[in-house]
Each structure stands twice: as structure tokens, then as C-alpha cells.
Length: 147
Image 1 (spheres, rainbow, N blue to C red):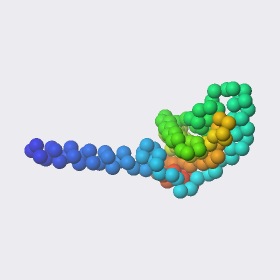
Image 2 (cartoon, rainbow, N blue to C red):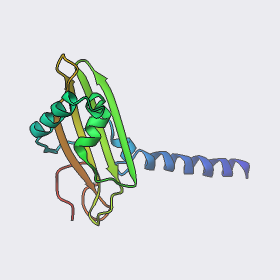
Image 3 (cartoon, one colour):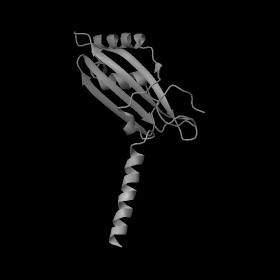
Image 4 (cartoon, helix red, strand yellow):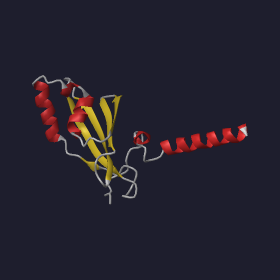
């Protein structure tokens, strides 16, 4: 009886692990870069960063605050932020999950920020992708439309 109970608990734990690593889990998708995405224009935002930097505002000195200011929502029930320091700047991923939309479940932003040598941080790449609610389209992050 004890062995049967132990097997049942082990099976439940394995199912839980498999489900938590699925593509519908936004935490499991941080390292998986989307295959398709929408490139976002950022030249005007870089001018805004420069103006704020020259006015000595605080947000242009922090890559996480820059990325948050750039994406400007849509805020979901869960927000996941990953900031990785690289040679010349930062690779940032922001995921807004479980947003209030009947088709789109969440948005993912992949943002690259580099320092220009004077302390000014500027966006060098910005991409957006999204995932759909179950039965409304793809579950991974992509630029394909949801239903």
C-alpha cells in the first residue's frame, strides 16, 4: 500500500513538473527567444531618453526603468522582468502575462540597451511578440495573430 501511494505521489509530481515547463508557462519561456516577432521603432524614444538624461531625471540611468517606460504596459496579472548584463549593455525581457484581453494572453518584449560611452543608455533593438489564450491560437510567443 505504501509503495502504491509513493508511486502515485511521484506520478503527480512528474506531471506537475511537465506542466510547469510547458510553453503556456511564461517563466519557462524567458530563455526561448521567439522565432517570429514584430520589430518596434525606438528612434524617437532614444531622443526622449537623451532629453530626460540631460534633465538629470533618474529613469534614464536604469535599464529596467528604461524598458518599463518604453513598453508602457499593457500590465497583466503577472509581470516578469529579466535584465542580463552583457559586454556593452543589457539584454532585457519583459513578459506581461494574463492580460485582460479575450484573445491575447500576454506580450513579450525583447529589448537591447547599450551605453554610448558617456553614461547615456540607448535602445539598439526592440521586439514584441505575443501568446494567445488556450483555444484562441498559438501558445508560444510569436507575431502570428490570435483568434
